Length: 333
Image (cartoon, rainbow, N blue to C red; front, side, top):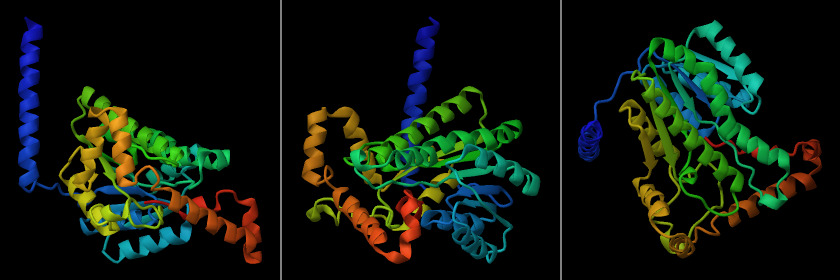
């Protein structure tokens, strides 16, 4: 009898959730206030990270900015301070667990407990799998995926004590469906999506309703990270690379509305669904029609040419000992 009752309740909740989602699509949701909250953003020196910082600053949130590039991070900090909020910038290497834990302790000592965590930083190797040095593959996974575990362990306990906070994961559409020649990136973003969803379920199971989560899955953003990537030319106008500001503004709306997940643009929900519903061969046929199966090849060729120019230039001879040269310069978000 209890099973039948629970089944009916589940169906009612299911119906309500679907109707609510439909209504929210057409009505402007109520946005929460983050004035006075302490927001930590990783990858704050990059294009998306900087825009996230400025958008949160406009909302009145104080900022903690993390990036491995000190100069770029300080530039973001200066821009945010001009908006009248408190800002602290830290140089942190997210590929190193101890660097994260030490910086987290420093943040707590300097400014207190973080209440909004935006895991935004990301890198890509930009090499074919069999041509890619192992250290670059490992770094992609460390920064894009493993760091999420360490960041959460560093900052979630304080949120749980207060039952208050917001965890934001900036993943990618390539964490929902894959394409060829970026195995490291797809694997790391699939891992990020799985991690985020499991964490969300855990918080719900513990009845920590005051801690919100938002998963952001954008299509390729025009930050230069995937420069050269292109689908079939007849379809490029239908799905062009996203403008960074538009991407961040859409993500901010989802965060402030406490939306669980957002794909940017909405068109990205279609391949996400078809991947699960259609046979494998049907998805392959669709990818080939759109040019998605070879879209990364021009991007990889661009990286090979840039790396080759660094090797040939005597001014960059010091970079020969840095296998992650291009990777570090191509910070996503």
